[in-house]
Length: 246
Image: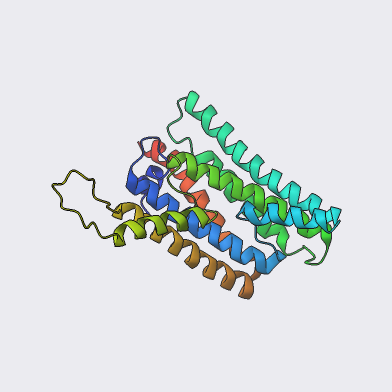
């Protein structure tokens, strides 16, 4: 891809096109890590609803070790989101042009670390699996906060509940029959077709990423994380080459 295109994905002046494109890329990555990661370590890590539910279940069942891991995984997700907020706000105050590139590079590095050491993990060892889950939860928190700040809270990439709900609302508006006349003073119910397309695109991207991640981990193992990390690394370092060429 052209350097300028990659640079625009993380540039401070935002466009809807850039927001959607970076959203699709990150959603593909999240879907791949969530589905592929489940095959690798037996745990979904991209959404915290299940993690908090697991915490509640394990507390009731008095499985305090597993409850502790669920709690640490939730804290890791929060810490990842907080890390993105600190980095982005600091770079904004420093007047850096591509404030989102650094969190992306950190995410790419973490994915590479997970892939590099994943082959040494013992799937049924409590400590190994727990550490991998915590690392992935931190990574997903980092990413979700990043796209939230990039898109001004319009796009989420690591979970689909909100996207699916918003899509259902817009579909309801689309199917609504405005029986009154246009001139009777009542506001017609209309769907936001752009938002509907965006939500459908992101949900489809998560599914495609999940299928790709599952196939990758199933047939190639942890090496399948390398393309994901390289894609994010390319986006994050493109601004440096663009400035050098300028």
